[in-house]
Amino acid sequence: MIISADAGPGRSVQATWNYTLGSIVLVLVVLDASLILLALESFNGSTGILDGVLLALLALSSAMNVRYCWFLRAGLDGGLPGTAWTLALVGPAAACWVAGLYSPDNRWLAAVPLWLAICLLACLASRRNRWVLLGAGLALTALHVGLAAAVFGQRYDLAPDSGTRFLLVFAAFMPFMLLTSLWWWRIVVELDRHRRLAGELAVTQERLRFAADLHDIQGHHLQVIALKAELAERLLTIDVEAAREHVHETRVIAKQALEETRSLVSGYREIALDNELQNAREVLSATGAHCELTLGPLPADPAVHRALAMTVREATTNILRHSEATRARIALGTSADGCTLTISNNGLTSREPSGKTPGSGLAGLRGRVETLGGSLDTILDAGRDHFELAVWVPTRIGAAT
Image (cartoon, rainbow, N blue to C red; front, side, top):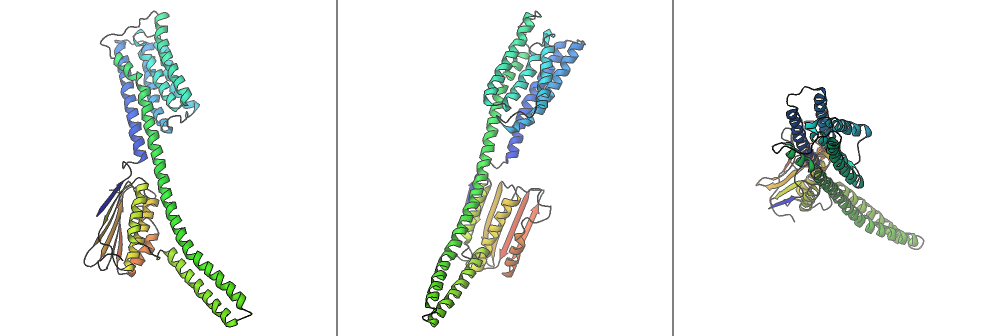
């Protein structure tokens, strides 16, 4: 049978941010490039100093707009990065706004850089200040055209075939594009946080299960030991032989409790392979990985059963600790001469040196498998972002009892 669980889109949070940032930067680059090209076109061969200064300010403001996008990772209401960066963003745009008043052909274009800078600042500001900034940006844009008309006698009209009309329309939609992109980024971050919490809860649930098993063992035995010790104490002066028998039974019960506790800690007490396989799938899925579980007939030999269950547990732990897997596969197959368990994943990280097997527990696991006459092999392919653990154990085929 094949059991598949898809708990996420299969992309890391870092990749999602890269796509979001790339989209924002692309829109700004296209908008700024169009702004500069339209400004060049409006010069009509002019070589005046003011035109050169305005063009330089447009280029500098465009570069700062693109650079400031990297701070948007803080998300909506994330806070401004610092006064120096804010001044570096707003300064060239404000200077361009002022210089544009003296350039009749660029009075609309010169107001756009300051509008774009204010849109970027509004994304990181608090919700109340965000709308204040956007309102101030609209007012400054209208003021720029009004001053040019009132003080310098420039007209408002735009040429019907001018690309400035389209540029202004795209610039007007910049707040919507930025805010929706960062809203989506916030959702991705929140989902990742919940996935991490789900993984931690799954680990906590496993710890509670272990604690419950330990309580079942120790609670019963300690209660019997306390009762036997109390009886021995009472009979010590009345019936020495009976007291000695109770002391002997206390020693046997204590030894039995110690053995069962050691078996539990070592993973030998009723480790069900099918339960471990299901737990592995649930834990990996809870972390956001797509986990595929393919199962054949389970081995009937209890020793093989335990060894494979421990392999699943150790491999799952290594995936959680030493990778950022988005895909995992667990396959259990049987043949006439043995049983093969294969566990693979992607999402290798640089924390593990190339060529080394992650997880120190695999060394003890290999010894346990070899004791049964089997073998344990690992394949680490950093180029294909693939790690695989394969265990083969000779066993007869049959349903587990």
